[in-house]
Length: 94
Image (cartoon, rainbow, N blue to C red; front, side, top):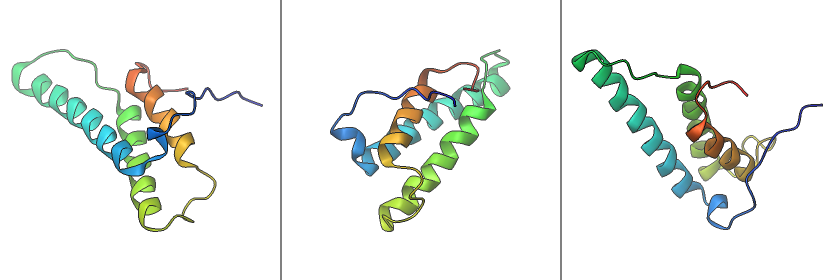
């Protein structure tokens, strides 16, 4: 059985809209780095796994916002802790 690290329980982590906004901010920074790599020939590392996982979590949160019983297997706190980890994780895989 694998241990999955979680952040401590926080009140604002259970809110879906601020979490979606945080994911959008992270994805924007990743996209900006990708654009700068192409146009300015920089070598900023882009972690595709993190980007795809964040997009998947955003989709789940969006559906969960309108239908709270969607994806009961994943709670908002579980997704929030994974987003916080992906925000600072460099190699992507857990």
